[in-house]
Image 1 (cartoon, one colour):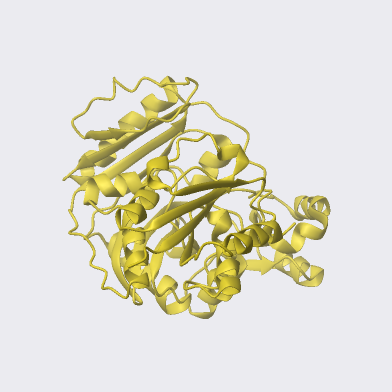
Image 2 (cartoon, one colour):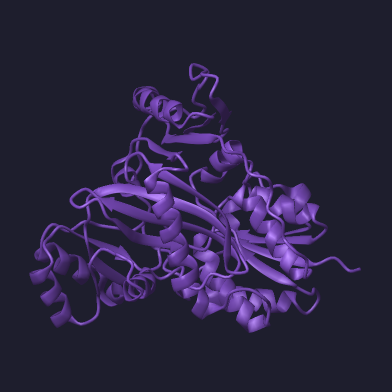
Length: 404
């Protein structure tokens, strides 16, 4: 039987485990990335055809390249490795008539305005928001909803491009700078609170794996001000975990329509009333080494299981999730002053993995005791700041997902 051919697109170096998994399952693997990433340590032994293009944001150029490729090769499936290619891949699936989510379905997991509208209409709490479109509506919102607000791009990844205006004058000045791009933004009420994320795999509209984690500092605070990014798996029988498992399924399956695939959803628990609010969700694997923490703690790697699920569906086979361990995990990440930070002093028995990435200090913890993980993260976070932490300017929010 002729092997299936799977094309991957990525504007970021990531997804080695997914590439290797699909190759190990007997598929032909093609990777299209950007020229600037050609020298990254991609797993070339798992890639049959490695291709580059100047800029994956040039949608029409990419479509032309891939349709030309299809004259000689049969592409059976296309998957994005990075958030910025999710919508492009959906367009290609529709154009080439391939399986997987199309543009309309993907917008539910890509456009923050769309997901807020649908969640709000389904009775899920979201921070009060307004579309940046009609100025009368915007004025009424700013008069009614107290500052500060959060001005955020509708289709960026994570905390990219987000600002926190303190008054209406700052909003208007920022919109002046955005010009014709302002309709690609939304304004919402800033809700102080603790931020959580739920990483899940859905099969046939049923969540077969979900893990609830709590960030240390909110990601926006780390992104804009630097410091240490941390996350930990919450006690599974806690009220927080049980509520977020329920809320996550209501959002991703019942409200946004996820049928098959991975998701990374974020929620905030407001300091003023203790209620959970839905923030956003992406149809991708969570970044910042979250997959590594999950694998070491539970045995479930979202990259690997996403690949297994996709190939099982292509072959009309039944996907079976792996057996899940019930250990707890913790994660610490910081941008480091040193090119090769020395993590040898972080030698507690619970330290099970350290990343080898230039100018990054990264480690993963594992323990059967959630309290031990929380205590170690508190201690190690303070030491990370002293030993390694530096900062860099936030990335420019230039990847809007628009053709050009």
